[in-house]
Length: 278
Image (cartoon, rainbow, N blue to C red; front, side, top):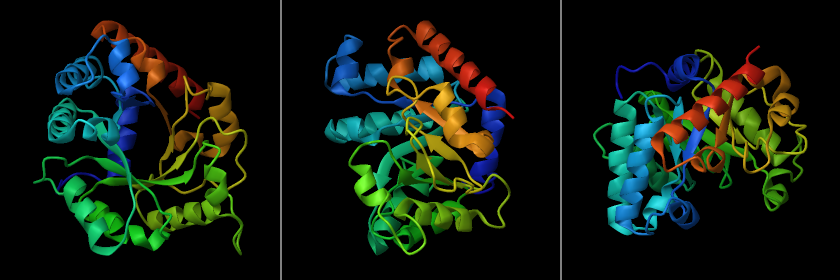
């Protein structure tokens, strides 16, 4: 990825051209069945092909969920590799939703796998989990900066179990607040928006932590999971120009017809862009 603009800059450019939306590419067993596809590598390949035809030329960011490809073994990972290459070739940014989190040489291994342009799974950005300590992410953060890639750090999620860790009290506030502050520190001095973002649920009832991280805010939970445009406006307020709403089922339910899938994505993108633009 040498020679590319920083991920945050490329994300802003993609959003300006294609609208403010990330579509999750989630070939779960239920989604494959809804499209009349078998839960096997051939069905996965067909699903990926439809998503590429319908979305890769129009959506700002595509977010394949690694687990749904991994469950098919090496054949599934091969489908993911082909999807990533083809989506990027059509101009979409690819954010791999893998939520990797470990320490030391293991995190360096993930950094090599996902950010080295010579590797078959090189992507534009990766989701990571910081709950072994924020500095455990250092190999990925440094590799992303060196290779103009992006990192989205899980901070605040809407699943009920998340609060046990994310909202635990620290000397300065909450665990999530400390993570968001660390993300902001990573972006200090970088071209705005920075290339280190945070994952913050769109459908949270309320957010009290400071979201001014000077980087993108990936907001899953929009659409079928209950998040609305009103939630985006309420929760993100002054930083809403940095929000990247993410949906999967809300768009994928329009498939498997590529034209209908494309229309659904474009309509959602227009709605959230209109609501979030300053």
